[in-house]
Length: 535
Image (cartoon, rainbow, N blue to C red; front, side, top):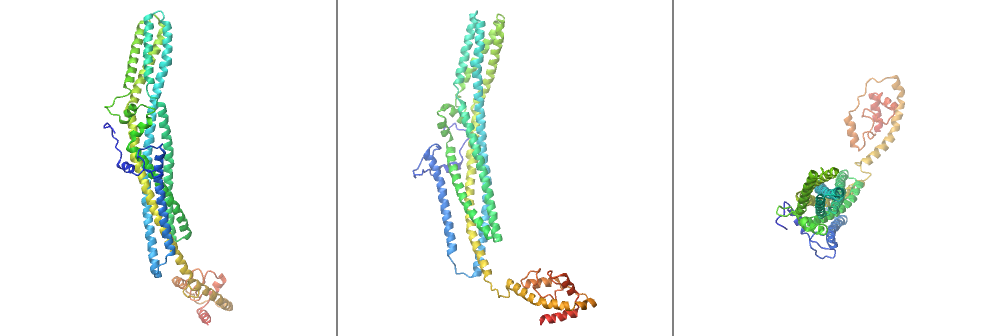
């Protein structure tokens, strides 16, 4: 590394990732140099993904052992203590999984945003550099076209016009030499067309991959959030089918988390290998296209470094100045003698003026500061924001794996607790008087047995009530008494579970005629019916 290096220092986390072991699939240690085209280097990155796959295998094995112990092992504990401990474990496990999931969601949101910002800065810098190189190529191509075609055409016509004057013809030949010098210097500049196409292709491909990477992590974020919320809902509602579905989704998401961890670690290590020594990689990549002194000039852009284009631009400037002086002399001395030459001389003068403007623009574009700024911006975007975002995405994958592992441990306990509750409910004796279902059946049969006596009695007194209207209104029983009686016998307030007398109103299931008959009864008749009902 040269002492002239400017303003870029690789962050500490790139050096840390750069120290990760680089081993190919044959377990042979490799150099840490960034060589993406090398097969062994590619295998070293794949090996990091295999380490994440091994972590997934260990995680699934631990979960399998835990579930086996949970299903096979039975502790000799009292039932109430067992229920209380299971409920406490499930609650705290759900809380822990929810908190870890919330932290993971925040981490992935920040990491995804940081990575996207870094990649955007990279592609923006590549497009800027591509625009600069396209401008250089356009200026060089335009100037060459003007010199090779337009200037030669005008000089040929002027040679025919000035054929009788040897001094004027000699001046035209001297201008032709100056034009050849300019063409030679322009042809000596690097061919930026290939580099321009490569930068544009890299920028397009990077932007395409980054869009789908960003979208994928956004979908993973939403998926993890939905699964966590659905699992919490299943625990709260104690829904077996929802817990089973979330358990399957949790296993799939656990696999996805470990897979994303392997991809992120491999990408972060590879990018860090580049960020530690980016100049060395670029020098090796461009050695067959551009000379090393030109690449060095743009990578370091130091005032102490000579401009590799300075000589060519100086020759260009001097040749244009000389040609402009010659054209001014011909306009002054040759036009009075050869008026037909004025048009071609003015055209040459205009062409030289345009070439001089192109020279100034070319000098500014070839200056190292513009391309070096794009280069540093790209490095900062990739090595700072990009790699930092990848580290946060790795942290998200670990947190998501922990959260779903805890959730997969809690769901079987919750399932077991729900199964014990249902089994205890099913074990209740049907003859138990405190069993709500048994009480409802007893009340239903007694209600059917007594319905005939009530209907017979009401029909027998129908004629009396029609002749003697009631002398005293019946006061309805309080609603709270009815509700208390219904709740006591385990029934629903909308059904008949208690004797009709004493409630003040019949249930909604009786017909309007029966209700009118009941309300028209006197106190003596009600007392008589109660005695008959007790008998």
